[in-house]
Image (cartoon, rainbow over all chains, first blue to last red):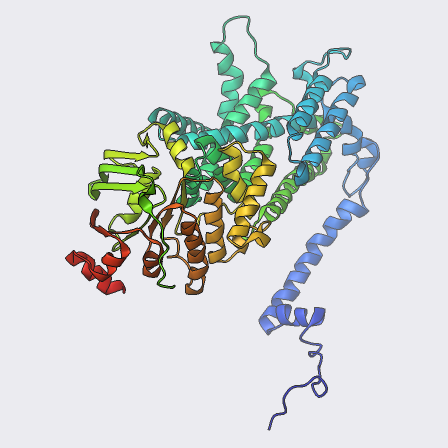
Length: 363
Length: 256
């Protein structure tokens, strides 16, 4: 007969050592059959022959701060190309004695983004803070009022990349929302205009939009009027990204149950209030993951501006590589660029995950 | 539910707050409501019953224009419902609606759900709106949940919040569209109790419901609808004990 359980007689045993912990995990997942053991060993060997030499190349035999000549005699990576050319890679043709200006502008931008990422700072003050920050950044980059003027043609490197992508995203998102609402409008004129816009833009590659903005568009302008080239590229990027955002947001709008629209209507809220207070907050939350996907690809697509002779950070790196002294270090330079792009993209995607979590309200 | 009927005099004011005259509605080709004539007096409590698909929900949804009617006229508090969006918004602010599936706003806390209408439609200061909200939450016995989100509440609690949300707009009329149909049996009573309290306070109510106990206790008039028409209407006593129409008899024999 079984005794009823009681804390005095019950003996708590530890599970066998081979079943839990690191050893247990390894046994269960890597060596649970002869075939899996073989695969594990083969994989370990594969890692040994690839990772080890790569590590040796990147960290052991490498040079970090040296002249170009010193790099010729080593087997490892010549990372020296980055510090030696950092000024040009980051700031391009911005006058050397003024380069503190784009540097300050970028620091200001990062500070603003960092301030904004905290949800507690999403209040009425946010808009004027950004407005001041943007005016200040514009002044630092362009000059005037005591600073020497730097033409936008000389804006290049990382500030150009960040500016094109940040303004691209921030302006494309509201425009995309308006297009999505327009596409669901009951008014046929608005609806068909939005459909036409979205489908036209989505049917054209970004490169052709950039070409049109830089070559075709000026032909239609009256003589003497000249719209800045960077601005034209910026507008092309905004118009392009907005069309994609619009379709994602429309998907989010369709995911909201009809009852939400009806509840908002039956309280007497007008269309604008219902959208702003009830429908959009819910649907934009749903579409955070695909939106961030679009924003990330928009960020990377800014590198296409090279084809209209704007020098973003990818192009300035390529220019550095055309210098005979550094020609041999293209692998290192591109790896550096990859890491740079990765940092920004990863920051965006991990922030979006954090945002999803904080906005979750248990439904 | 007890048999005790709430005593009141519906004809104390003779002004109809809702007037529906010769109203027809179609969904595409389907003639869902046919020649509806209905006058609702102030403080009157009407329960509408009928088989599913008889148009009872559509009827009350026409009263705050969640559905459009195609022929006839509807007046709410003297305002005719037409395509004029300003009039529609005015009527909606005066008419509270409680849905079968609650339709609380899941991204807002309970108290935010309640203050939204007063703040944005009535332009009430936030503090005052919050005080009103807490008062109505007390009334539906759920004040301790004010800071939670709808997703954290049970169905019965959510429906009580939905009622409180409508009350915060201080409506002249309350419409209930099968308010207890989506609830588990043990939660139906807590919602009905709130509705009974409301009826006792003299709120004008139109309730689409199959809760016959509720109808017997609070209704001044019970409407039976079938195939888009009001087949029979009577006071609850005569309606249940002495139905006139064959279809009413059949329906009552099926649900009682």
